[in-house]
Each structure stands twice: as C-alpha cells, then as structure tokens.
Length: 268
Image (tube, rainbow, N blue to C red; front, side):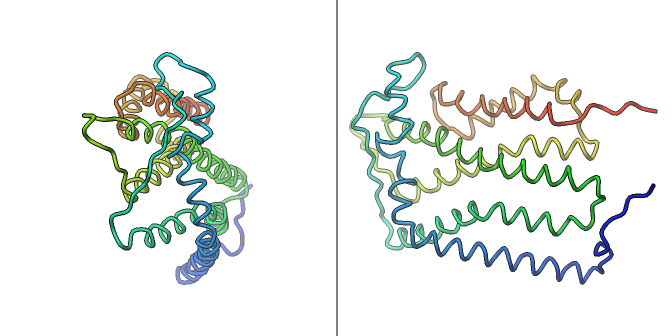
C-alpha cells in the first residue's frame, strides 16, 4: 500500500519559503535571548569555564596529577601551573565578550535549531522515514555535545598546556594573547563537536547508497592513515600522547560508523 505524507507537504514553493523564513526567525529569536543571558553571565563563565585550562586547578590536570608519573604522559605533577592571558588590542575584550556569547548561545540553542530543521523537513517524509530521521537528529545532537565535551575536557587542555609550556629557548617567555587563546579554544571545541558527527554522516551516506559496511571495512587501513593526519591537524603538538588522545576517539567513531551503516544490498 502506498505510504502517505502529511497534507502540508503539498505547499507551493513560495509557501515553503514562508515556512522557512519563520523557522529562521524563531531560531534567531531563541539565539538572541540565549546570547543576552550568556552575555550577562559571561564574566563568571569566562573566569571559571573558558579560562579553566589556564591553571593547575583544572579538573583534568588535578586528576592526572593524582595518578603520578605515567609513561608517555606529560608531567602534570607541577601544582603551580598558571598562564596569564594578555590583551594588546583596545577593543579585543569587548569583541571577545560579544563573540563568545554568540557562539555559546549557538551551542545552547543547538537542540532547538535541530528541532526547527526537523519540523521543516518532516512534512516531506514518509511515515516510516520519520522515526529513523528523528532518531538521527537526536543522535547527532548528542554526538555534537559529546564531541564539544571531549574537545573542552581533553583535547584543548592537553594541547594548550603543551604549547604554553614549550620553549625553544629559556630566554623566550611565552605570553598568550587573548585572541590567540580564544581562536584555539573555540576552534578545537567546535571541531571536535563536528568531527563527532562522523557516524551520522556515514549513516546518511549509507541511506543514499553511497557507502556500506563492507566499503568501510575494506578501507579501514586507509581510514587509519587519514585519521592520523586529521588528528595531527587538530593537535599540532609534537608529543605522541596528545596525538593519541585525539586519534583514539576518531578511530572509535570510525568503528561506530561501521556499526551504524547498513550492509550492501544484494543485487537482484
């Protein structure tokens, strides 16, 4: 029996544009409200959360310090680690306040953004497709937040501490600029959030018949090489431990992608 779509799927092109316009308007309002709230709370958020990895009180540093000296790991036993972030541009602190509030607002409003996208495309889906696409949206949202958490909790702190303590000469003193710190911080957190969408991307490609489970298994060794290059690009440090911190989650994501894609369909 033919599957039915919702009645409003027969909207004209201009009616679809009107629906899209209102969706974008609602998203903008939600982001704006979240941005205002975060802007007000930003001084506290910035001191405790954004600048957390700049001192030895950061939870990851304290946990690794309690483990003692481990092979291949950097030395986290020093309890006096502290990096002072400096500003050399007149408007940088104000602009950073605004831009950071905006990006954090996007993160907070991400589930609502996904909901609006779902509500816009749902009328064009068959009933049996809605359940799987809804699950994909929920899974993608969870993986995005998980990736951002991994970026903030592990990837950025390891990278920042290595680079902040690295010296080509004892006569050269590291002074970290606010713009440099924020670009690295936001870049790594968001990159990890996007990278964690790899299983969802693989699932979508398999739905279109572009890849399948056999394909991913066949090119596993090639994928390892690509993931190593990607890990090196995300964490431009020289120590193998930090590289492995990024590579292992990426490889786990690839293996998860193999699990979520479908098998090759037999030719009839």
